[in-house]
Length: 203
Picture: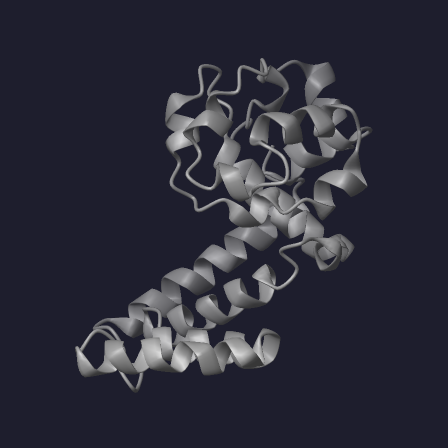
């Protein structure tokens, strides 16, 4: 990376610089996107996205910050990394999606997205993982539906009962072995993430 490029990314002057600086790790190669569309064609969630990743990257390059951060696209990313595997330019697509989600939450624009309840669902999932080392499906679904879709909770009751009777879902959460070690790892990861943010995304 050139000295001029490094200086630009240390003090973002455009939205694309801001996104690159907010993405931890090595250079995410966002500025190398050639708009081939391989990412969108590879994405299992593509039909549910308001914009394909290719379109979103073009919007980022055009400085359309508010439109990008209001888009539901990052929230429908399932982190399968298939797009990254197939990208001819090695653009770190999934990592960029995570950065956009963090930015949307920080700016408060996720609330204007059609996936506005996604951050709360994600935080609930993370809470269970941090406490028990695994997801607790009954607690996750119950908390989410009661808060965002109360009528949906009633509709899901029959489905949930069927899973319970077949032994496919637990009534109470159970901790994994070595939960203390996992908590130590997660705490360290948070520290590294905080340090990376302070240092301009680790660029």
